[in-house]
Length: 120
Image (tube, rainbow, N blue to C red):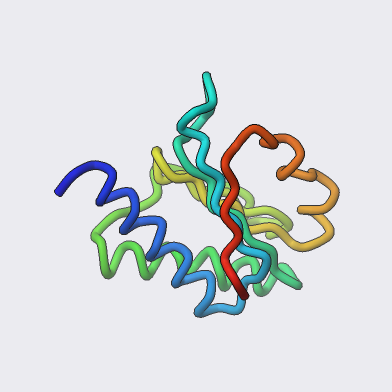
């Protein structure tokens, strides 16, 4: 299986897990054309509470581990659950509480990326 196929499977599984836990405003940022970017892809979504942020990140971790046998290299932000970052090396998942996402305006920050919106 090619690296791109594996990466696409990972992205699809992450999106599925987010949708399972009612994450909204899901966007996929293709950063592969951006010099010095920290990953090839960002998957970003919003949640309405810290409980939902933790539910989404927990479901992503469980689904990816159980169905693809992959674990995040690094996870941070679970303590306060305003913004959880899950690093799968080529794919980084950001689960934001809505107001935290608006504050950091990550779409503007990575405006050069090719952004795909996933229908809720």
